[in-house]
Every structure is written in structure tokens, then in C-alpha cells.
Image 1 (cartoon, helix red, strand yellow):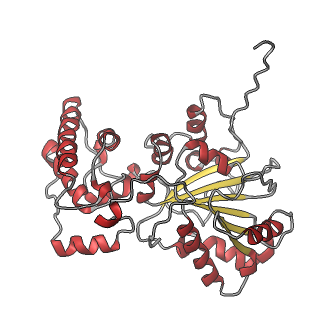
Image 2 (cartoon, one colour; image 1 turned 90 degrees about the horizontal axis):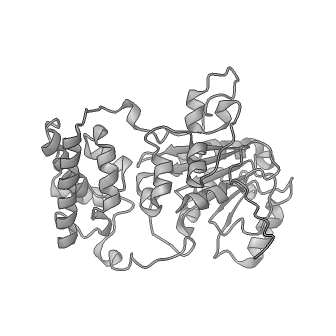
Length: 366
């Protein structure tokens, strides 16, 4: 091929601020999105245009139902839902009322079905409840904000169990243990340079914490939950290289024995199994791990017996955990009932079937 013209454009859009916020397992949707429902009640059809991406149709339904209930007839006409199972006539109606600058629909709860081939130039916020599978998907989805070049905001909310469904690069962007600029991390993923943003608080949630300007908009607004970075206030140990290597070896032995038996403490939870990626994350963050609650809040660990097995390893290696708390069978049973991602045996037989985001439908309590 001769006279080929190669055009490359970095995916970075410096008009979009990126924020990532971790939610506690107990936090209700009503609390997370109270800032938005209050804005809808107050401003109605003057609410800043917002897309909320969910990772399943069920999650869409839960979030839309919550907003419908909270608004209770007030500004309900300003919200809509959009996914692959939405009837075509209703999809057209939603877009007809959302795409125009002054359209009455101001908030759409959607899966990735919304956005393909549709130009909505004045979306001011793109929220995520849950984590996209990959950095590429995340960048594409927040890129639907303010295609007219004006300032906008990409806000991602997640709970620990959402980490089970994304790749390693996306996990790194979310967890960000070194508190790097998220825009820089995205650019490094694509092997490109990122644009410098000024003022600094318009870049990402990490840069907002470092910004010392005096503007009233400097810090995160009241609608922001706790940041995803959790190491700052946690206890910390000094780890020698030989301790880190010993930890890696014992966790590998635990992984081999767990996968060979197919269960831990008799659990039939498919996600209880320990893999190489989890071992790498645990070893890299071993300075901060002292409790089962920390393990379950910061890693893709979804049942208490797995967390206890891992914490026992830490207690043996470092000798600085005075007591590893073991729950009784009654307490474990209660945990399984409360855990939104606890998979029973019947369900786990089918969980390996790969489905698209829109096809994936769990009966979770969000």
C-alpha cells in the first residue's frame, strides 16, 4: 500500500473531569443519587442533562424505580430508561425528548445501548453505577459528555463486587493505590500523552485533592461519595522482600488447594476461588491488610470465609494481627443472605456462560 495517510488522535478529552468514588456495601441508591433527585425536584426540566450507565438491565430497573419512587410524581416526566429490551417505539420517544437542547427528559438511566450512533451534544454529566469492563469502554462512555467542548463531568460510583467484572487495567484505574492522576493513567493505557488541565480541580478527583486554588468550585461537590483511595488512613506495616515472597508462595499454595477442592469451608461460591491476579494485588498491597472487612472492601473477594483464609495467611506471615476473627455458622449464613453477589450452587453452574452487558441479568439487591 502506497501513500498511506495515518491519522491518530488521543482519546483524552480535557473538558471532561473524571471522578471515581467507592460506596460502602450498605449505602442505598437513594443516598448515592440524592443530589440528583434533589436537583430534579428543584429544577425539573432545567436539570443538567445526565446519562447514568448501569452494567445490567436489572440495575437500570432498580435505579429508575428508586428515582421514580423518590420523585413520586414530581419531575417523573424528566427521567427515562433506555436499554436493549426497551421497545423501539419507546426508544424513539426517549430520544426525541432527550436529544434536543431543551428536551423535557433530563436524566436517562441506561445500559450501553444508549449512545451508539446518537449525537447528544449537551450532556453535562455521565455517571456510572458499576464499572465498565475495560478502559476503552469507560473512555467511550464518558466521551458522550459535552461533545460541544464545554466543561463536563464523568462520575463513577462502585461497590466492591463490581470489581469482579472488569479487566486488570480497569481495576488499576479504579483502585489507583499510588494516587496518580487518572487522566495520566488513561493516557498511559493508550500510550499517548495527556493534556494538562487548569485549574487542577477540573482534571480528576485525585488532582482535586491536590488543587490549592481559591475558586469556590475547587473541591468536590456535596453529591460526591467517599473517594476510592482507602490506604491513606489505614494502618500500615513495613514489609521486607523475603516476607513479600513468602506471602506470595503461601497464597499460591492456598490458591492451588482451593482450586483443587473447588471450595473453601464447604462454600460453593464460584467467585470464592483465588486467582493469580488477586494474589498479585494482595502482595502489592500487603502493607495495608489487617482485617477481613478491608479485604472485602478493596479486593474482588465476596464471601467471608475466603477473606478469613487469606487473613490467616497474613497473620502467619507477619505476626502482627493479634486475632483473626472467625464467624459462627449462624453469622456466615446471615452474611450470605445479605451479600448481593453471593452465588448459590445452582446459579454458579451457569455463571461461566459469557453474556453481553445488556444480556447479563442478575437478580441483585442494589
